[in-house]
Image (cartoon, rainbow, N blue to C red; front, side, top):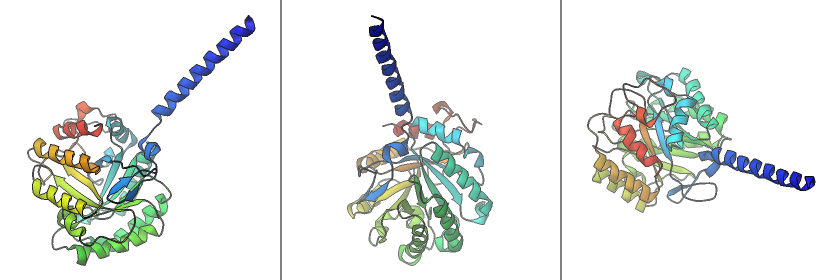
Length: 325
């Protein structure tokens, strides 16, 4: 009888331990654990098993101005809300705060996102400098450093030119720049995805589609601000997709193109439905409490971690409603 009781108790104990272990495993399933190494197949980003996946991310503001949000608690808050990707925006222009001292802040962000099992985009944030060739030497050194350091990880993406603009063309400026930077990255990292900006503030994906790069695991960036960019830009995306170009929306919001102004939820909804249809990933601008419409955090909120949906701005709450759909 006692032996029988011992057997029953042993079985019960093992059952409890197994249940507990299963719960632990379920809780530990991070985005990177679920998907593994990402790659580009046709027009899509796919996981390690070749299945289409949709990145859903948030971008920091310029880390020279808002470095306080580059931390694990902040990133974890967004992961809980359904975000799987963090974009670290390092402005490339000295007038916009560029400094080699900020490389360590980028690395802090990579380490924090990696520790949370999230994908992370290392973004060379060209904006007012316009032409990616302007600071090409610095870009080559920066991406050489990052690829050497993180090339063996499976959660890294490199964005090599945020928004080329001004008197800049695909053939004369962006394509030759991209070839040089990609070659430098591939010297140390053969597998991770590289994001290439397109002309006119990363809108002309249809132009890039006419003469795409000849490298593997490349996607092309499309940026939109829904209150400004409507059907004409959605048509550019459709044209590029039909031509076989893999696209990632590495920056967007639902305000106007200034990053401020009124929100257009109706245009935003059309964009989100289209991206869902095509399984195209998207990264929301921006993680800060700056007093402008595109900030994901309320200007009245001073928290830099342990954020809740109630801490998000109007645009932040609207965008967050799509993260778990």
